[in-house]
Structure formats: structure tokens, C-alpha cells
Image (tube, rainbow, N blue to C red; front, side, top):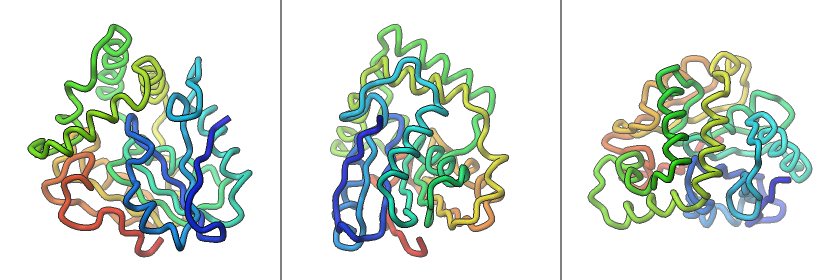
Length: 244
């Protein structure tokens, strides 16, 4: 079972917020507060986060199916999916499966393609996590471009502790084994907006452009000078839902 946290207007447009790997469940809290009068917001607690227990074994497809089941049991209208990082892959997968009515997708720092070299690096990271590596030490480097704002650094360092190291290792291991999603995305018919920082190390701009080249109704926006958690560094509104 996937726990769903709910907020906003009971009869508003459904909006689903999917966190990254890792990030806190309140990563898009500024958006949630802004749309609380027009949208009904669902924040799924994925396995290991918040009120949903960790899964062992962690099977990516089973988690997607459980997420889909939790959302379809609640939604009464097509939903806007807003996602960050690994959550973007999940949002695109939910949309392309076709069992959930999706109004549009806003993906921030996302991807749908994992080259073999990255899969090897992910498996090495999983091994390090299970050996006791503290990912807090690399959070600023991976999530931020400038790394000069102490508040932003503190935010991304907290994300590492939104889930246990063991649960995060299981999640990344499952992700590393997942077949590329990119070939399936040509059938998507809902609008997709992808925003990526020009200095994003985790999901560089070419990954967003690759999705944009395949999805019929996609718009790719590259935010100058920003890293992976681009809303912490961008000068403009990264959470703009215009057109979705």
C-alpha cells in the first residue's frame, strides 16, 4: 500500500507530487501552497518515505503498479503530475501506461534513459550505501550548481535523511535494473514540460532534450546556471503550471 497525503481544494484539479531519489516529501511545498485553492493535491509516500514502509525486495514495476492503484482509487478527473529527479521517470511511466488519466506532466531535473555507464555507477553507489557511506557529503555537489547558499545546502543535505540508507540503496538498485523508458514515450499524448538546470550533473540537459525529441507534445526548458534542484537556484518560477 502507498500512503497518499492530501491537501487543497476537495473539488479542485487533481495534482500529484512525486519526490526524487532522495528528496523530502515537501520538496514542492511552495507549489502546493500556491495551488491549494484551485487543485486537490496528492503527495504519495513512496516505499521507505514518510508513512509507507520500505519494500524488500524492491521491484520497480511493483512499486509503479502500487502507486497507480493508490491514485486510481482516489482520482475522479485527469491529474497533473509534478515530479522531481527519479520521480519524473515515475510520472512519465504512469502517463504512458495509460491506466491513470493524466492531464499533463511537469518534470524537473528528470530522465527516461540510463546509459550502461550510469547503471554501473549507480550499482557502485548502492554498494557504498550498504557499506555505510554517508551520502550527505556529496548532496550539495550532486544537487546544486553554486553550492554557496547555506540554506540550499542544508535543504539538500536533509533530503539524504528522508529515507534510510538501506531503503535508498534498494530503490537505486531497482532503478538501475529498469529498462529504458524512452522508447515507449512516443505514444504519449498529454502535454509534457521538462525543466532542467544547465549545470545539472545528475540529469544533464541532453537527457531532457532526448525526452523532448520523442514525446509529441513536449516542451523542454533549460534554466541557465542552475543545478539539479533548480528551484533552489533559479531566478524565475520553476513551478509554473502554464499549459498543464
